[in-house]
Image 1 (tube, rainbow, N blue to C red):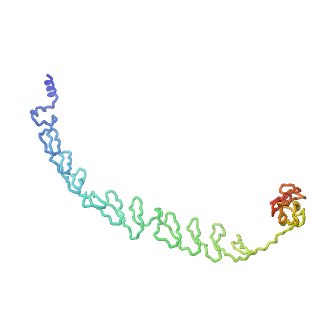
Image 2: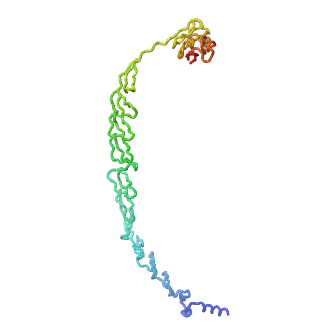
Image 3: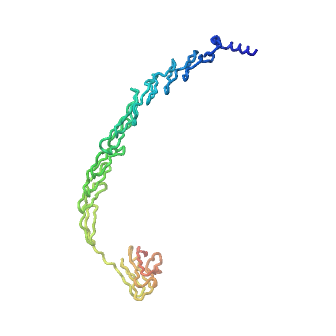
Amino acid sequence: MIRRFLLALLLAFAPEGAFAAYPGTPPLIVAVGGTGATTFTAHGMLVGEGTAAIVAMAPVADSVFVQGSASSDPTTAGTSSTADSMLGWGAAGSTPAPVSMGSTCSNALTYSTTTHAFACSNPTQFNVVLGPAAGAAFGLAAPGATTGVPLISNGTSANPGFGTAVVAGGGTGATTLTAHGILIGEGTSAVVAMTTVADSVYVQGAATSDPTTAGTSSTADSVLGWAAAASTPAPIALTNCTGGTNALNYATATHTFSCNSISAGSAPNVNVLTAAGPFTLSSTAGVTNISRMGTPAAATYNLPSAVTAGNGFKGCLKDDTTNFQTNNATLASPTSGNVDGVAGATGVILKATRQEQCYISDGTNWFLE
């Protein structure tokens, strides 16, 4: 009962004529899921043919590729397994053909879209290979005969070439420079060299122009001087000025040197104290009072009146053989004024061997130095 039901379903839903074309013996047709064939060529690729039986291509030779076709069966037309070749298309949709790699190429392999062929580019020895525009051949930059010349950029729109490095590229922009000449920068322009500067001549700078040697001189017994700030220098002659009593002098008014004679100064004034104290120190300014007592003993050394001595009066007291360490000296001002802040009558005690103490008046009081 179930078998009859299934057979009825199969007959009801099968494509029209399916079972009419199938007599019950092979092959099973494509329309019912079969191949429509009972045998296929060994190793042949199978190709569909709509509802017709599947067909088999002839076996494809070793390394040969199959080429498709939108409206016909695939083929191996134009393919090849030629040694040292590749399968290429000269134009879109064209029949492919083998493209030979040519002979052995140890340099740069090239390909031409015009001839659809590979070639080997052999750049000239020692030349630099330059990248070409799209589709163009490589370029070459040939060096000159001079060694050490660098390869220079010519920007983003031109090929580089061998030449002189400009300042902007870290060079000097020059191919030769004056021997022994001082080099001068000129912004982004080429470096220039001054003419050779003579022996002992100085170079003078200029804020807005190149340095020069203007105004310089190597005149004997002279110095290079500027009469005014930023003026042009000029040689200033030195005059002969020797001897222990002469001194070289320079006048800013005339910008010249001269020789001045030095007069000997007066001998220092000394007042030697040899008797017993107390002592009255000299009232003459600039006098050094030397204590050289016959019988050393402590003593008082009285200063003159600070008022009488006047502002700026200066003198000194020096221990010779009295020995102030043992025989203290009292430096006092009994008539007027204090002594370094101490009452003049009391005075200041000096108590160092060989001590020298100087004093100065402001016209009222005494101050120790």
